[in-house]
Image 1: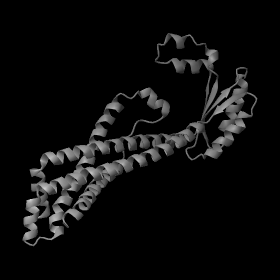
Image 2 (image 1 turned 180 degrees about the horizontal axis):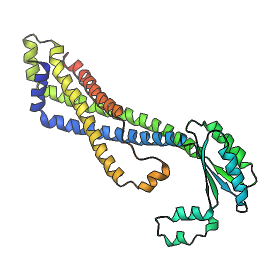
Image 3 (image 1 turned 45 degrees about the vertical axis):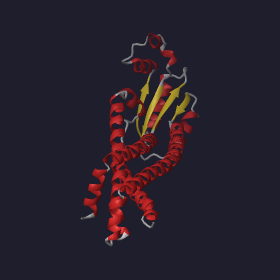
Length: 289
């Protein structure tokens, strides 16, 4: 009988025990998958904002339209600038209130919204080039301030580093939990099938022959547990994305994204590998007795 057939027979005989083990592994991998999902979306948002190549030039309240036109003309002649759009105070107020029925916001006068120039830059514009352009514009008398959104990118980068560190720590905890659960399950399975193992060894079976089906069972527990965790996180992700505000997506410039296929595949492979290693380690000493 092949190791796969023996593993299948053993799995069916200890089905409840294996189901409990898979459930425990799934809980551990759900935490890991959720953390990786957050990190992936923060990374995508950081990259999107870093490539956005845009700047908002806010004009002073006393700046004339001719001064704004001069700045607009100069910007259009600047390399790396794709487009420039003048947004008057009234237009800014109308865009803010569009589709909203808030009575408090509707009472805000147009003067509260400064006129601005929305500048779109080439995607390959470096952060240094954006900063240099912003410094030049900020020095003009008609300009109140310049927002390049680079500070938000830097904050996201800092948040991403913290998230990666936290995910690494969580991954270590998850890996330890998976190894512990699978190893305990395999040890208990071996004890329940002790008579079968002793008979096999009496007829000359080697330790490797006895160990193989248990290793396969451990690998299946780890792989199936991680696969179920990805499925559960995916279902929760679809629910959250269906309720995600479209306007908010347009505001931040990104829609929620699920884990890439290679990350999901790596999680399943990791679960299977950890399960196999945990089974091998738990049996190494027990079979030697």
